[in-house]
Amino acid sequence: MKPDPAVLQSCLLFRGKSVEDISAMLQTMIYTVKPLRKKELIVNEGETADHIGIILSGQVEVQKNHSNGNNVTIARLGRGQTFGEAVLFRKENVYPATIIAPGTCSVMFISKQELLRLFAADTDMLSSYMENLSERLVMVNQNIEILSVGTLRKRIVFYLLKQADQQNSNSNTLKLPFSRKVWAELLNTARPSLSRELAFLRDNGWIDFKGSVFTLLNREGMEGLLERNSTAKKANQ
Image 1 (spheres, one colour):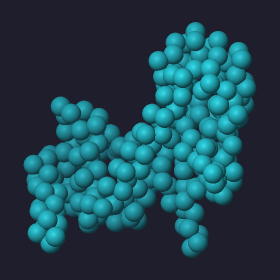
Image 2 (cartoon, rainbow, N blue to C red; image 1 turned 180 degrees about the horizontal axis):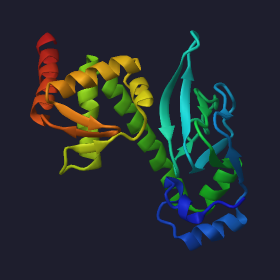
Image 3 (cartoon, rainbow, N blue to C red; image 1 turned 120 degrees about the vertical axis):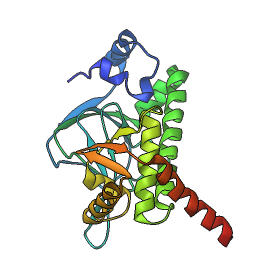
């Protein structure tokens, strides 16, 4: 099965390359493409990372398994995104989390050895790879920032404000990029707790929502809540 070059254009690794360029590269590249069924395991936590995965269709979930049996979704990755790049070249190159297919999807795998060959032949790909690692680090830092904000209500407000700015700086309307279940896990809370806080914010005129679409009705008040949190921290220092 040959990957669609147009899909690979959305992958940071191939950024800046034309469909024709990618088609030519695929003629000489060594890779595999694997179609995956719903709930199929892609990578188990602790496995050796010797390939990078590129999502060609559907989505994959990165999950952390805890000793109490609970699985927490750390991230959900979609078409064009990659996994495995952060640990591929580590001395202890093992996956720190489990990766599964929440629905049907397909993934392209490129080995470490093949990547090294590509990097040697094309320094632009190496630069793109490093950029991908940097963006992934930023995502991790953003998750840490969310969890450090304070109460669940403040974490929700912080996340909604960030998403509104990232999706459209001129609008107070945003769309969640994932399900409420995944959002609750990102905020380190239970879904019923998230629902209660969202209902509180809606009933008090701060936000409105329908499905995954949210509207910020009182942005000034939301920003004020976070500013009070920041002021209180400085006073205690």
